[in-house]
Length: 116
Image (spheres, helix red, strand yellow):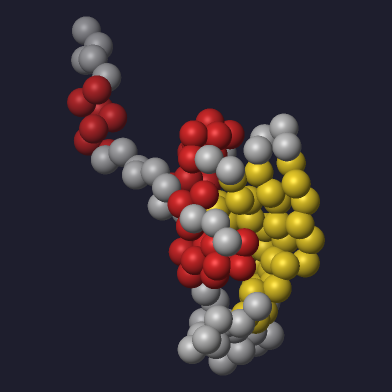
């Protein structure tokens, strides 16, 4: 699907419903000729338009692009609600998708009690 004014197109390769985890699993291909590899945020934005859901409910699991081809393939998951997303997804995936903030390095040391 091509959104007006945008050069990047998103094509859904496979789409699988997963009722147990309350999500839709998507394999996609993003065509971005003569442009840099799109960010996860840009992919999530485009998928939210294609899937007609909120951007906050989409998690890009992984993306892979080859040099000079102008295509990126990847996997994303669209959840039905935010609570299920935060329970199921691993923290590092939430950090990558900017759905959770990384704790400051000093905050971890301050939270742990000093050993004697």
